[in-house]
Length: 238
Image (tube, rainbow, N blue to C red; front, side, top):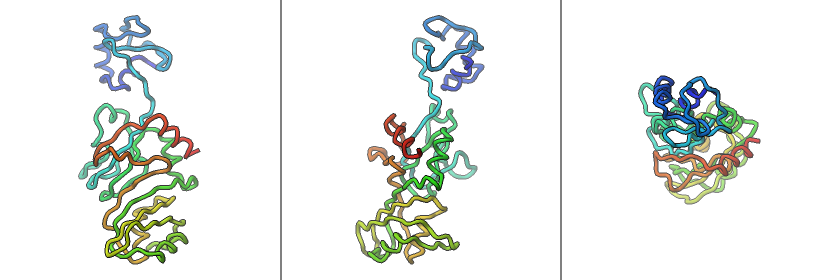
């Protein structure tokens, strides 16, 4: 990889700005000053520093976001704030995207990455990656609903869902539930409850496969996944 491309990809400026750094002697490769922007380096084996700071090469980034309401799961939008707008420039320059989507009024776990292969595998219907949601339901959710969800439900467009695992945390005029499904149809959780005559009034995703929402993340906050979390996701999609 060209040295100027490596530095630009790692967020040290545009190609033009990187060349200025090179001219000033700010860049070293394996402890030797380098001014040639076209020099080819191995980002894994060669040690590259700028003003003494080591450049840590990353091809992919994996971010866990606690998505707030009012933000859409998209990379750009003319009207609404997107989940990418919540990222700092250091992460945004990797051009990441949300893996799947959460509705505008839904909170919780959203994976953001630039690893297209992993994203495709996690979203593939064949993989049946489980996703768990916490919700407030307008209406009393009972054992009958649990059985209906376990058998699969017919949605408003005639689609018959795969079985869902419904757990009632509190039953009343407003019920609290957890639901695990292995699909990601448009508004699926809301439509499944509509199919049994009830309405979702609050929805939050708690997990996706083995990845669980970090309870330390406030709404709108995010962090990079640990190596262990990335490894778990790769095992999930495999």
